[in-house]
Length: 310
Ligand SMILES: C[S@@+](CC[C@H](N)C(=O)[O-])C[C@H]1O[C@@H](n2cnc3c(N)ncnc32)[C@H](O)[C@@H]1O
Image (tube, rainbow, N blue to C red; front, side, top):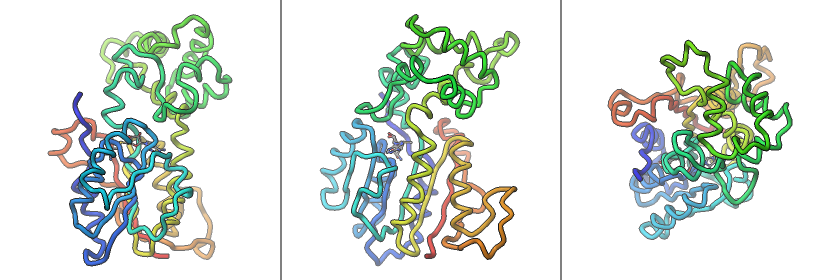
């Protein structure tokens, strides 16, 4: 299996290069994955340590290998980044979130993230807890399914897809990735679009179910402020998101910390805002042409960076 190519690596390293090189640095990598960002951070300088997190046990095994090379400077914890508070670290110089899935997870059939390979419909980032996608589909209430398919998947034909899921309960069709994808494709694809669709008609629903199974948006809502609180003044927070639902949370949080209106309907006066950070990226940073041609999976990545003031 091919490894994971770290996204926006150059741009992320540049973000952390603004830290004073002579001072020891402690940086949180909240999403270790294949460890590419962590390793590049460790290579920046010898007086830099990384606290790395990942809730996937497979990532822990990769971290153990890297830890042998950096026994004093890499500290790995196999936890969800929503639980950052449970760690004792304070006064961090920086924090990085590279959200979503690694290629290791996408490309391993038995993880159930890809509808192109037949496998048990699992989709959990952390296989030690929670419901699998199949269990979720078999037991969720209609409202929970609507939230997943309509809100998280942004599937235009969500009503039909939710009905099809409920009708398929107990038949076995929800248990396997490809049979579930076929069911969704039959329901979501309009005959005309099916002639040449840009994306597979099950893509949106798979994304929505994955977000629901892992509570992906909730943990970002929790993890970002928790990491921000652990930053020292001057600390850098860098976040890479891969779809608009993630990016909206990041953007609003960054604007809130910078004392700016969070969205178009936020009409609070400036007196009601506190400026706790400076935005270092006005518009999100996206991959350059050379990265896009080398790694097509980077195409939807957006990097936002801020610096904590107080
Ligand atoms: C895009 S990959 C990170 C790749 C990494 N930056 C690299 O260079 O190899 C995202 C990783 O974050 C992990 N992850 C996603 N959500 C998480 C969460 N809430 N808590 C901890 N780890 C999470 C996933 O298991 C996955 O391994």
